[in-house]
Image 1: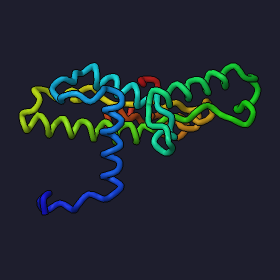
Image 2 (image 1 turned 90 degrees about the horizontal axis):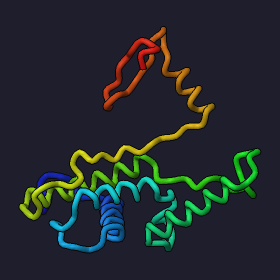
Image 3 (image 1 turned 90 degrees about the vertical axis):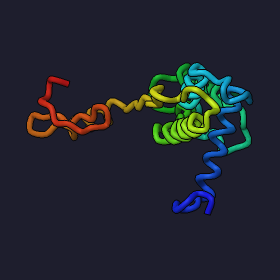
Image 4 (image 1 turned 45 degrees about the horizontal axis):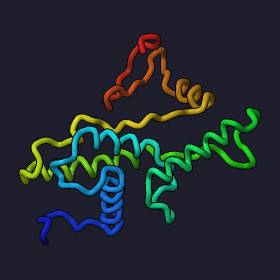
Length: 171
């Protein structure tokens, strides 16, 4: 077993990893690994945040074209009537979820960590860059979440991934 005592990777994991690498190369170009800089990692992060959720599920392989098409659709939505959530039955284009962005970023971080261990690069360009996506909620959903998070005058907050109870009004 070439990977030690670990289970072999599933076909889905392998396919997702390949898709991440293809996406990285399509955004940053195919260059020697030590030529990539932190600005390339930041560009990948911004691209991931902008990609439509449907990217990779169809024939479109160019992330920039997919983002442009999604942005144009969103602009058309914004120009539409302000009453109701849709224009001609369409809604704003959903983007990649935070979970998907984190998976792509984690894959690239691990690759760079491996390259660093092998001595192919001096520094992991993805370390400490972060991949936190902005999660937007509707006003109704935000009110519901705030109501659920308040308990006996204490509000539940999840700062830096560590749940804490804090008195309301201090957040």
